[in-house]
Image (cartoon, rainbow, N blue to C red; front, side, top):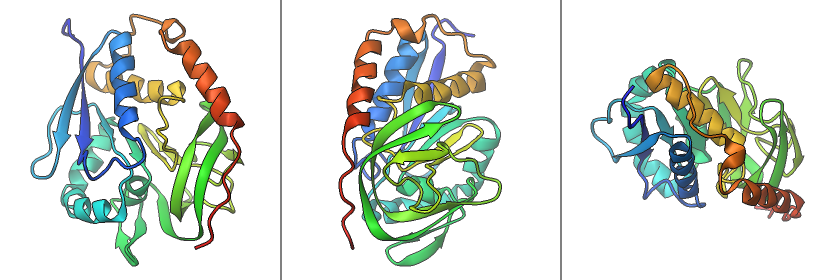
Amino acid sequence: MTSERIITILIPFPKELDVNGDFGNIQTIQRRLTWYGYTPKIAVWQGGQLPTNIDIMLTGGGMDSGLKAVYPHFTEHRADFKAMAADGVAMLLVGGMYQMFGRSFMLDGNKLEGLALLDVTSGKAPEKYDGNIVAQSSRFGEVVGYEIHETVTKLGPTATPLCETVTKGTGNNADDHNEGVIAGTLIGTYMNGPILPKNPAVADYLIEAAAKHRYGSFEPTAKPENFPVAAFIDNARKVAASRPIMQAARI
């Protein structure tokens, strides 16, 4: 292990895949890595050959136009992403990218084949889900965020939800009352706003997976309760959880 303890973060198509403050997820991972005694290194991918030695990938959601633009590039490297996942690379997949990494999804009125790293299928929703969301996770406790999507996602038989019970908002769909999916070191979610600043347990799960991928173990040099933002995060979570749900707009 080098003295720098580098963790490489892959950011795919930052212009096309950042519409709901998702850049905040990158900032959170960078800052927490630094506090834990690691050195974050950013690798941007905008098509062509994928960067190597990646430990964690963070994707934003993207508008339909952005998703259409990046879809051919991701499908071209389907095997590479599957190999990364099998090797233990951590991935946060938000919104449209959560759908794209599933088995199939709708884009611009067309059903497209996904990368099939997640056992989920996505389709058109009967209404637009736009508002604050609170959900309970057996792994992470209470998870808070904001959702805005006109799609619904159904989990397949091998999929495990990120949050088993949505107590405020919609999540994956209006019937199953769960949110997102977790598959090894991969997390898919409709929570943006972004998700990681207000949910440090989720951020640290990805960080630990990235450290283990690179070094075989996670050896932090500081405890999260001593981070300078610990009290601020707790307050932000309480405020977010107390906010009312906005009425879903009928399409």
